[in-house]
Image (cartoon, helix red, strand yellow):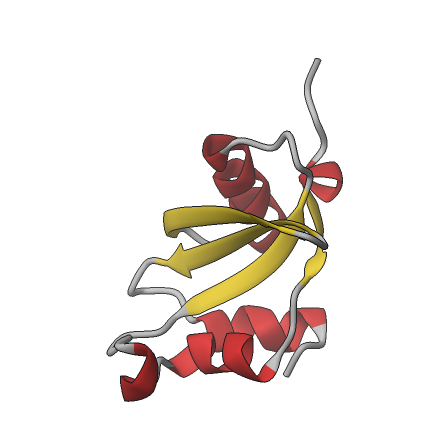
Amino acid sequence: MTVRPHEVLLHPYVTEKTLNFLEGTPAQKQADGNRLEFIVRRDATKPEIKAAFETLFEVKVEKVNTYIHRDGKHAIIKLRKDFHAEEVAMRIGVY
């Protein structure tokens, strides 16, 4: 059974901290930033999240980190250097 990308990525997770992921801040020890955070299906794997994100937004993902929180499973998606998280954030209406 294949899962459609919209079923894997539920919605972006937007807070002041996650907005700092876009550029990267010295306080978070992220020199490069270029990350977005999404709430994803609890049973989604990192390769499924990566494939869904690349399909939906036509970008290349360098790395996916996940963690479980009380409001669901979160995925922090780091884009490759030749793509910009700010562009994706503007397309989805976060910025």
